[in-house]
Image (cartoon, rainbow, N blue to C red; front, top):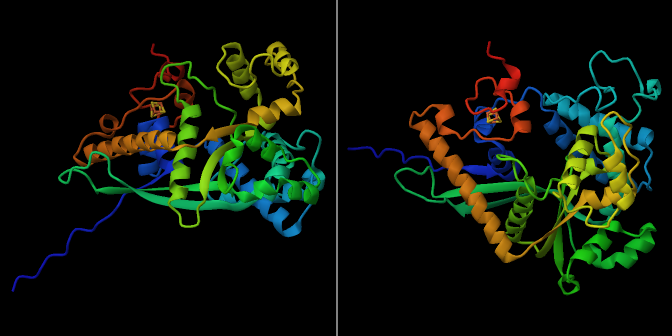
Length: 405
Ligand code: SF4
């Protein structure tokens, strides 16, 4: 008797919106080494801050929810313990901040210092200053509106260009984590205002941007980004169009969310660019360049004239300009309109990215060399911080590291 052979296992490749798709768009080859080769970056500072600020906002929300702490929060007593906890969690995963970004961690092995040893210089370093502002500027408006946080959303799509002899599967899975979901609570602004005794800047921003007729039964997706507001146009060849990619991310989240049973109509997305609340010197250099070259949407003409003047007169060796809270808030918040046409366009883009990743994978599986199978193309900034730049053929920045005699 002939025994039947076991059928081939059926696996659907799963793609994460940020971990895979946005990472592949930044550079295909870097994505291959870091994600598929599971090599963590050696200097993951950008990643550290992104994860740190997400963790801090999530913990701060839980503290607010269960302890109903009043704003503004004190950095030393209310915020610093959260920072320490998140820092410890990240250390376990091998992610450490630069010394200039965060006050020493109480949790570090061998540490004998306590919070009372804080000095003027150590007090609220860059990451802490951003955490404090994020909580006291946005947290106070955002937390009362939250319906769900860190919400995992998943969906399934047909594999683009499916070919049964070549493709790994006829479908692919797509997943993402929505930082914050808020809904009808925004209609109760009056109640909220009385209850929490404040004028809610996020509600006001939504009402300014959303058609009043849309404000019925709806949801808003909110995403935090541990970065500055990107320019609306890319000025250099190979530069990543972050402005467009962030929009596509929100639109794709909205599609994934619409597939969940308890979802309501998703009316809009909001991105909070948290670095704008306390821009670093590097951020200020870019903001100045973008204003000069008309590459940013904030400020618009004749807007924030005093802040623009301060930025234009600022030089790299000067102290950071004293920008107004209104300017920082306006640059920090972005509205994304959601409609079916835009959503379809974003999903098509992500299908294209998945198609490219799958093609590279299949080529590699067939024996093609890694550097030939994966496209290596990134902007100068990404290349200069890339661990693989010494042997990447396409690194345009390589001459800066190695001078050929
Ligand atoms: S050096 Fe640049 S092009 Fe090469 S892998 Fe790194 S990011 Fe990509």
